[in-house]
Length: 220
Image 1 (cartoon, rainbow, N blue to C red):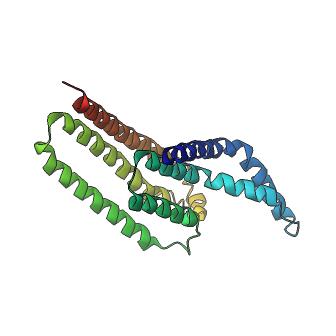
Image 2 (cartoon, rainbow, N blue to C red):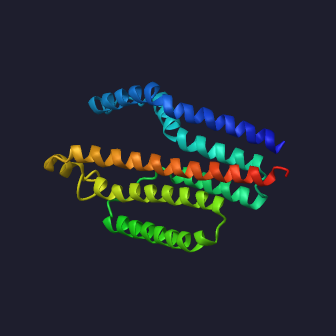
Image 3 (cartoon, one colour):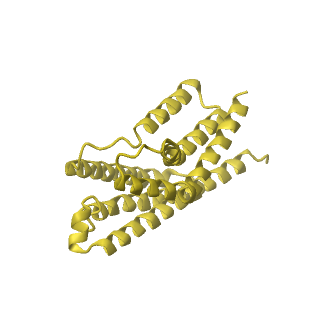
């Protein structure tokens, strides 16, 4: 029964992800036109259907991946306590995913960046000390993951100049005043490329790990 529910949640999640991808072309244009009309006629009654469609689209990607994760957890036999922790934590995240920030508080970004740097430093240290004791095949898994983490932390770092004192994405009036739109595009492109590379090497690490497990389970 759990596996059937798991498959249902996985399929449902895939449909949500498809809605997130294609809704960009089917839902967003109509909602933006509605928003523009609301500016011209603020007293006009709201179009509830367009608002609901937009909200479903806005949450589709996050809801879809959470549904896939919960479904995969059921199929993987994740223990009851941990499974409910996944589910409750995911639902709490969805509830707060688009909660508005009270305002721009720059120390928050400095603290977050410092924590990310500290976590990365610890991961590098653990990798450097543990790698010599690993079997040679396992080193490839560890190396791929380290390369993936490197690109992900570079992507996180490039959010600093994108949002802060180089491109001013968080203060668009400064971006326009100083003519930094091109820099915003540059840093955003670098962030995307580095994230793709990071996830690619993490994918390679999991693929290699699965291959090693298959070799170990193969009869001699």
